[in-house]
Length: 245
Image (cartoon, rainbow, N blue to C red; front, side, top):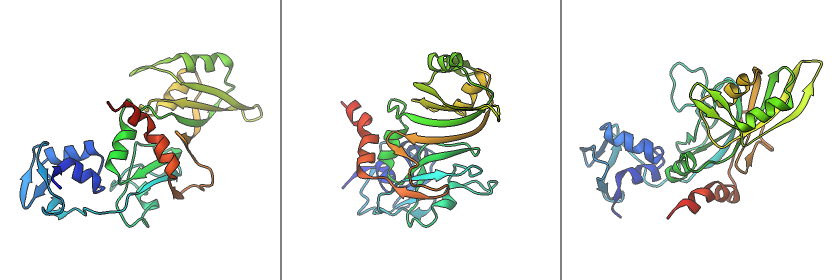
């Protein structure tokens, strides 16, 4: 069946739809030996040879939707020659290529979703999707209710105002002079949780993403992964489906 090339690429697990469009405009895709750079171009994956950087794509691969408990010190990237260890090393036993949806910085642990389903990745990454993400932070000092109120109302960062949809004090560890705080966000700017807590006077000592939508770390040791359950996938995609005209 003839389809847009970016859809074929995304469905084949090459990357998200948006990333596939960038591959096309960068001239890295050929169809039957002819370079394609127009986003409206179409092909038939059953009849045409579609290549990325000269290598044929696999048109029929199993769909993978997994959650990884990313440890600290591991980089969220597909390829990085300067990184000692990437998340791809932790899922090397998966027979098909997967890639992370979103990012966690190297110092942050926890829930990271990976997939080879381009439509799924695009739906989760779209700004209007707003999947809630919860982080547990261990911070220096005794966080008070005024700081929690500021986090909920919004704090000014260098890239604009940022607010938590929820923020709660889990515990004070007086003998260590640290506080454990849970923060839930509906957006994902770079190092946002760390910057928000620093804005209210508390440096983050450790940070773990404990939940993305319905997906948690329950039963997952650091560095291990599992397949997402059908109910989890459906719940993750529900906001995107309800937004479709």
